[in-house]
Every structure is written in structure tokens, then in C-alpha cells.
Image (cartoon, rainbow, N blue to C red; front, side):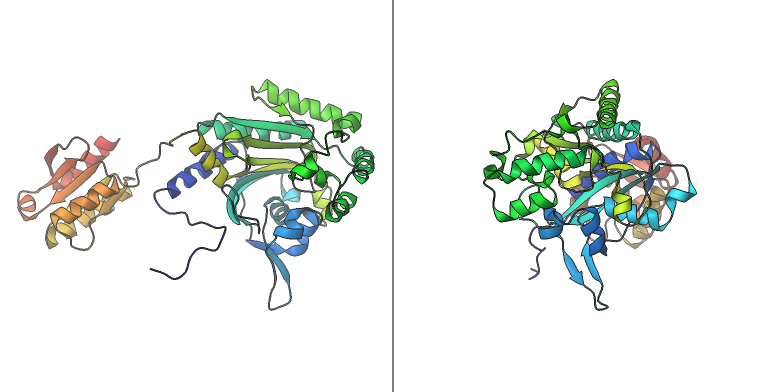
Length: 420
């Protein structure tokens, strides 16, 4: 047994469970690919400053959770704790906003890293699928992304999730609310760190999960009461478009999420079957992020959905995904001549798109058939010297137990017909 183990707060994805994760990623990505979003992939680490500016220096992500390090060349880098800042950085660097029609629509899938207290549903290494629509200020884009996420979850069979929706205002009306909230927070019994956070970004305090803080926020001023007319109209159109698409949501007037860059529309997907870590994904509009990281004004909106937590949500609802068989045909050769022939047939089967595997290692019939059973294959092809002398192989249906002789030259076509 190896003396090494996966680092604390991480996990290994292993077959057969890993197939569920792949299926979840595919289900989340499918509506995006069908809606004009192109795939983007960014490095696993970026400049610390990118996240400090974009995510926000007052956030727990930056102050407590980033894996930051200094390279031999003296660069300060961090493993990416989220995807939006990296995707926007890459789009700006490649001038994607200049070479095509706006918005630039991108989707991504990858691993992210945060130094958090490990618990079920919260890991130090986790997987997300995300989408960003960069360079357009349009309520229809906000609605589109919420609808696509809802479509992805429902395609997986999930039903017991809720969409929480709020507006965080913009640079015109949020400063007024910020001042009102700071005045309120200064009158509470809060520790020094929380009071310091309130001076940097008071909305962070609303996102504090501690009961000692939350019980004092019952009378906190609401952003809804401070929205300017433009933000009210924008938010109402988002609500109308989502409702018109038949997607249910709940207004959550205290929803702020954990990142500083959000403006106007913000939303979260929660699943009540996951306990304290109920958020399975979320996002919102971030109209000022491009300027924060040195780019031009590019109003944008996006989301990220957690693959890990989506899998947990499926488990909570008892949903078993219909996964394609890893192996449809398993070949069992008995003797050297059969070994060469069936290896060739396995290669031919794979070329026509049939998942096929082979009894490697020269095992006898009994051991090879055990492997065939474990593989989950629907059919097993067995050939020995007597079969080859007659120009046939034995085709066994592993479900019914039926076995028939099929001509060597007909076996690929026969399996194509049977497997459709």
C-alpha cells in the first residue's frame, strides 16, 4: 500500500463513480454549446493581484482561502480560487472584445482551489463548469444564463433546487446604500475583523454565515429600497424574462454572494438536501470587473455551477443517471491464433464506435469470463482453436445467457446491428 494519500480536503475521481462527474459536466455544458458559447481554458494559476483586484481584498477568498506562493523568479502567483477573473483576463489579453460581435460568450470547465475547512460539499480542490457573456449590458443575457443553468439541472433530473434572485444596484445607487448599511453596522456588537470588513465592503457582512452576526442583521437596510430607477427597471425585466420562460425563482433581498465584483443581477442555485452547504452554483452581473483589472468598460454577466455539489444533489434526490456502458463487447481469446484474430476484431469494433475491451494477460476461460462480467459488457466474443477451424466465433449475450456461432467475417456487422 502506498504511503502517500490525497491532500486533506481533496479527493480522487475513480471509475466507476467518475462517469457521473463526466455526465454532469456534459449536461451543464450542453445548453451552453447550443447557445453560442465557445470553450475557453485558462492556466491553473494566475497573478495574486488579479484575484485581489477582481474578487476583492475584503473577501474571505482573498484574505483567508487563496493558495498563494512566490516563484523562484519572484512572481506572486495563486492557484485560481474561481473562474471569472481568469476568463476575463484571457479575453482581454486576446482582444476577443475587439475581433467579433459582443457579447463574447465563453464557457469553461476546470478545477479550483480554496483553503477551507473541509466538510461534505466543501473541498479545497473542487470542480466547476462556468459561463461568461462579456461586453453587453442586456437583461436578456442575465435571463438567458439563469434559464440555461435551470435547463442543465432539469436535464439531469433535478427538481428540488431553488433559484434565489436579487439586485445589487450599480455605481449610481449602491454608494448610497453602502453608506446607510455602514451606519447600521457601526451600531452593532461586532468583532474588530467584521467591523474592518464593514468599512471596506459592508455587503460582505451580510454574507457572514455566523449566527452571532446574522441575528443582528434583522433590521438591516435593504438594497431594494435604495435602487435607482434604472436598476429597478433592469431587474424587473430580468424577472419578467425568467418568468416568461417558465422558470420559477425566489426574491432574496439579502443575497449578496461572496465576491466583490457583482453588480445588479445576482443569483444563486440552492438545494435543500445538502445541509449547510446548500449552494450548488450561482453568479451575476459584473459590469465593473474589466476596469478593475485594467481593461476597458465591458459590462458582463456569468455563473459557475459546482460539479461536486451537483453530484451530491443527485444523490440527495436518489437520481441514478443513465450512463453509457463503459464496455459493450468483451473479447475472450483461447490460444495465440484467437488472440491475434480477436485483437484485430476489437480494433475494428472500436473504429465503428462500439466500446470494446479484451482479455489481456493470457488468462484461461474462467478468469477471462470473470473479467467480462466485471466489465459490464452486454456481449462477449469467445474464440478457440476449434471455432477458428470452423471459421466462427461464439457470441454470448451476457443478459440472456444465449450463445450463438457467428462467422468471423460477420461478427463486426452482427454486433453493429445488435447494438444499434
